[in-house]
Length: 161
Image (cartoon, rainbow, N blue to C red; front, side, top):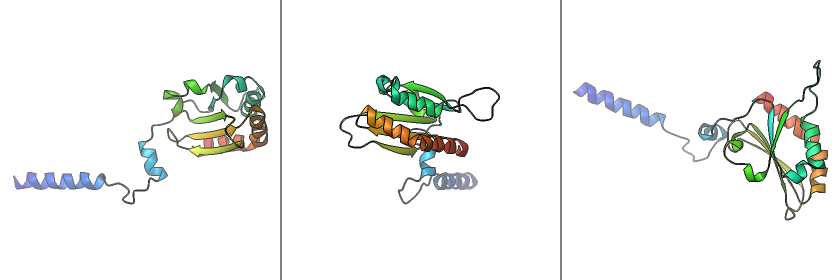
């Protein structure tokens, strides 16, 4: 009976030690990844969350030109990325777990066009690029100016992944 009690106490002690977390209360990237779901979507797929008006105009054309460039050194033309577009209204559920997301917001209340890069927002390992602009023209200018940075960041993150 003493042996069984000793085994139970040792087992509970091991379980207790194993369940200890970061005592500082700070969520590190590695501890955050444990609780995030895994990414979805195929390699080379990019989800663009953008309203249909801008997608069908010059802003959408610039994004497609940037991401669907031909992959260099292949014998037949093949785009670097496969691009999927959805509007903000359907961006929920499974779409939030996509591996690479470009989220575009055009709103007159935004003061200045900007771009932000984030990692592991809804899933891990995930890259989220957030573009905001007050109007369509500012968005076009932002995309045109940041084309190479957007492409380079996505390629770098895919290699790291």
